[in-house]
Length: 194
Image (cartoon, rainbow, N blue to C red; front, top):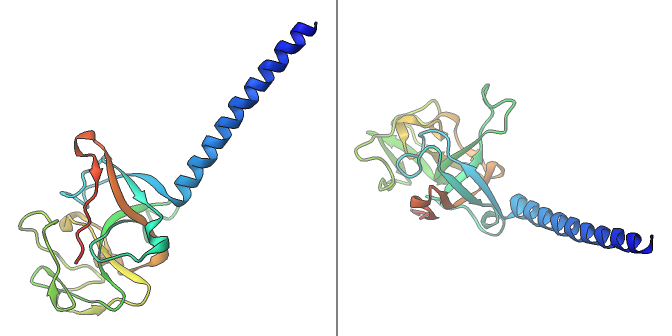
């Protein structure tokens, strides 16, 4: 009986050790997920050729707690409310094109920020930027304090700031930091600032 009691005690202690390790690992994972890094899957064609449908990314949620977003950052953001996203927590991947105080317009299919044509190295070759219901050809808008204008790199197939306008800072989940799938494309994401 004593031998049986000792065996049960050892099994109980081993179980508690395993349970403690699992709880600690889950807690650390949760802290990382909530405050540091979050995985995301690219869905759709709005960022082609920079990001393809089905790729997996890690979003850095810490950078914007200690620093400011910059023009050119690729970000994940909470999508503005739409009929389709009303009951879901939809998130978009887009590029910051303009920020507080910037003057933005479209001229002959090109994005003009503060009087200068925005870089196009990340856009598909020969693609023009069409107007939307917010950003119209030949009409200059100024981005308000605490807001960001975002666009997809695949301008012909992207629902973005041209339609829904600037988004508030609180909508930014974080900056895309790394692509980890497919393995052939894995690596840190280059941010093109302008």
